[in-house]
Amino acid sequence: MPMTYKHDVLIIGGGAAGLSLALRIADQCSVAIISKGPSKDGSTYFAQGGMSAVLSEHDSFKSHIEDTLRVGGALSDRETVEFTVKHGPENIRWMQELGVPFSSDIFKSGKQLHLTREGGHSHRRVVHAADATGKAMSDTLENHARQHHNITLCEHHLAVDLITTEKQGYTDTENRCIGAYIFNKNNNHVETFQARHVVLATGGASKVYLYTSNPDGSTGDGIAMAWRAGCSVSNMEFNQFHPTCLYHPEAKSFLISEAIRGEGGKLLLPDGKQFMRKFDERGELAPRDIVARAIDHEMKRLGASCLYLDISHRSPAFIASHFPTIHKRCLKYGIDITKEPIPIVPAAHYTCGGINTDLKGRTDINNLYAIGETAHTGLHGSNRMASNSLLECLVFAQSAAKDISSQLDKTHKFPKISNWDESRVTDSDEDVVISHNWDELRRFMWDYVGIVRTNKRLERAMHRASLLQQEINDYYSNFRISNDLIELRNLTLVAELIIRSAMIRKESRGLHYSLDYPEADDASIAKNTVLKPEHKSIKEKIKIIK
Image (cartoon, one colour):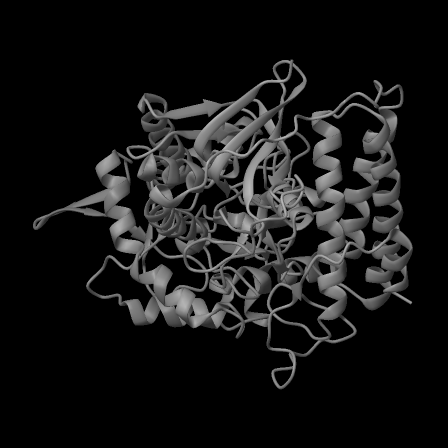
């Protein structure tokens, strides 16, 4: 018999956004957190650089706001930027109260947080815990969540789809989200989780690309589920590629923090020459999109498999104290960063677009919220400034928690929900279809919808994405679901949204660079790319490109 669970708030995702929202609201209601694996498998845990906030007397809200707007390429929403920046310091203080061990310096006047500087920032304003900020935040939040009597942490669970009153056939009320179907990987059964409020905190979709700095779970689940439920999305064409991931056959997806460049690290060609000043007067401290394109350009020009990042001119003691995680990991692969440069390549890193929300995290569907990387709040515009992502997670978790708290006394009773039906499916005998399609998707997205794009590449990608969707949907309809099938289904849908958005934007702006439209078109194109569900057939989707 399928299991059904009921909670006041269902949070899908156990990173900084989901955990912090849970802690802010759990004293008032019951909370379930759905996590694909251990919370340590999420993107938060691997964040190295830190979280930006105005904490220095030499800095100002105005400066942080203007930096963010400038990097966002005329697409960041000023109201959202101001809201986020002004709530930054109080969220840092909240994290300190929880016990996050941020790095600090001792002065005659007392102990102060150590602030570093990263690309796009005009001041030192990045709070960090050495070079493992995400781990420190994740561990602290998780420890508090596990100790709270009103929080149930469901690890090794994967959301399949959202449940709405419209899908359940209720026509006497406005459409609202009332839960989700959840695949329990511990027993391979789909269970029903009912909730008065549902929060998507599922992270981004960088796993859609062949090379990524993200963990395996970054498969765009929240974006895909929200789209299927009827939510609109924006700016899916803006995929941030981190300029510096470790290039080593055994390293998989190890990120080399931007903080290394913030502390004087130099990008080098294979012959040891610097090159960034050719592309931007800010050199190594230019925004990530510019640095990533510069590295991509030089690699292709030279036919090089990688370039290099050098911090060896700083003292070994400085490097060991500021970048202990990177130092240790590189030593594991035979690279001593105190003596030699680090081989690096760009990799997909952050999804700037996502599910449309307001300043309270509310989506197009009643009682459904989206926070963190899965959401489009208007903060990042066409390019995310370094270390604004953890800031966004905490600020919008706080904002959504306040809104949910104000609604708890007004919430509806639990309506009757149909359980997951597996009566007409069988076990798959062709799992090779999943592995083959997974590989094909990530390869053509890297080749055709990567750092540099063209009309022809996008047309090819749309054609392949449409065919893959048809094949995967047929497979999904006939066989019992699995973890890989759920993620592949979501990734293929997100790939289509990325491609469609990129085809609409007839200019180059921020993270979207097209050889066919190399200039920005401020007169007519400086606006968001908004997509609304139309439920087109596969044939209709293919017609879009013709």
